Length: 246
View 1: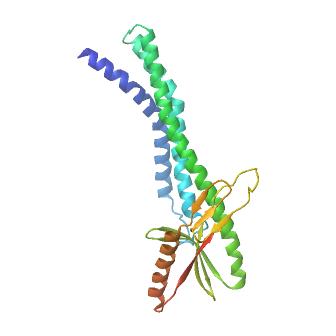
View 2: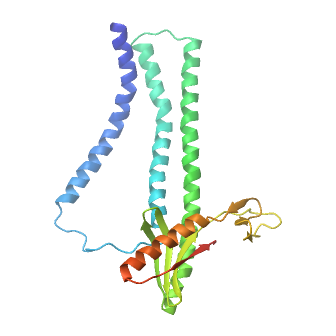
View 3: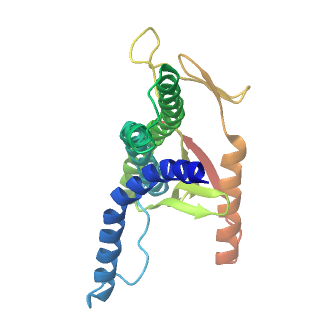
């Protein structure tokens, strides 16, 4: 039983230290939110604002950045917590040092680092992908906003049951859904800026890879908007899909 409690203490001690480090932050945030809720002044805006280009991507980027920060903190705390574990095991339980013990602890660090590193790489790759997409949506959004000078109405990041429509343009010539697809290109080399659209195979050929045109996604977006507008206006309105490549 004594051995069980010793091992239980060894396992719980690093967790207790980690909780002790995080607790002040949690208490500070909770206190700040409580103080904010007591304030008599509030946001004067009483209705939801129209979304800016890339609004949904910004939220995904924010969530991923929180995940990245959490993984980096876990990686930084990994070695100190293992050192605490080692010292406690050596001086409290008086476990004699040995090569096998050091090897086991080293393998534990390497294994945990590999797991954290793989997850971190996955999150960073996703973050890079979303940031590239956000730049594309901002670029297309700025270009489409110029159409308002011609009397068009332009809306961005319209939510619908299957996700979001990047942009919607309402003009005298019709209604259009605009889907933005941003892809990176080689920094150097022959044909680095060449893009070929193959309508027969429904694919877009970049210098270093091929990419199928998302016809199903484009049709789903335009069909939903057509049905939504037709039901709201009481007349048939057909939205035309457009694929934009910045």
